[in-house]
Image (cartoon, rainbow, N blue to C red; front, side, top):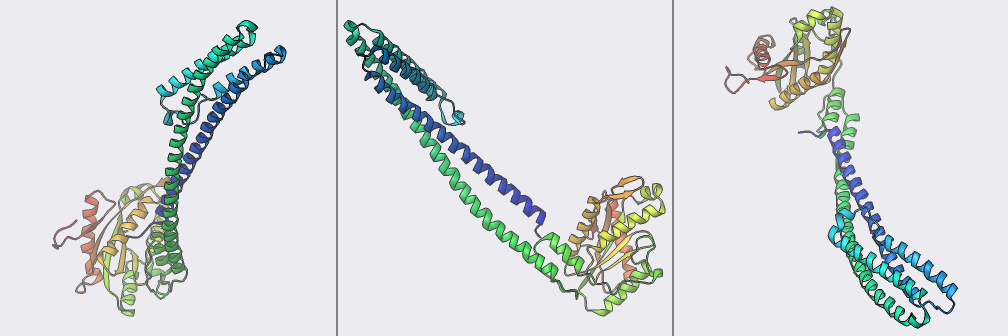
Length: 397
């Protein structure tokens, strides 16, 4: 089965989206680690401020009052900063543990600030007692600070581990994506080279992409054997009429040895409805667009005709029935996906068809009625499909 360029680029967009999402997640985690580090900085500053407060000289009461009150205000601010929420708290933190540590830190911090103010305002006779009380509160405060520091370090380690894992996954996926799609894009480029270097002698080129294969087939069409006699062309579609098809078929069959020939007969499922509401000119536009779609699949030894009963015959020279059947199905699918513009609005149509191997013992004229039976079976099965013979000649599928 050939690759689809559209699918390749769609998958590439998904791969790039996944990589970009991973990079965004990694960025968020790194920002979160930075916020955890800010918490550690706030805890470290509390250590510095505690040391500064307890070493303040109270001999100059005015200066001591300014210094300690300023340090206490700054200490309260850093206590809040050490518990500031981060982007990924809900992922990395334990609500109960964090709440317990936070409450304990605020409690001991408040107790120490209160003790420092009592020491600052105490009389000389009770200053030593107030100092001992402040040191006792400091010791409890430092224990809580160390507990929060340990907790923050654990969060940072978890975040760093996750960041490493995500970075490794991104790097691995990035390498896989790069080498895989470099290979795929090289395949597309090779197919494009084959497309623009295709020979008009009908030489077949092995390609891996559907779209380039389609273009090559279009480029490989031969023009010399097209009818120029108006009597051999269908007036509405511009394709060979029934007589012209037989004429071109006989010429092509005798110009070059061919392999297997397959006859595909196609009929518009909504033909009666379209004829009832569209003018002859509008029906001609529909036929011409169908002709354009059919000729896109035409190869040098193929013959396409618009028959008298408004069916389309496509005689395919292919190496296998599977290949011919696949192309017939692609034609049906292309018509289904196409829109036909008329004065009545946009029309959507489908085709029903049949395919058989042309037997050497039967002429093309004799084989067409056999294919017509398959078209009937396809329409009875709901239309928009290709019917083919089973192994037994009297069975259809």
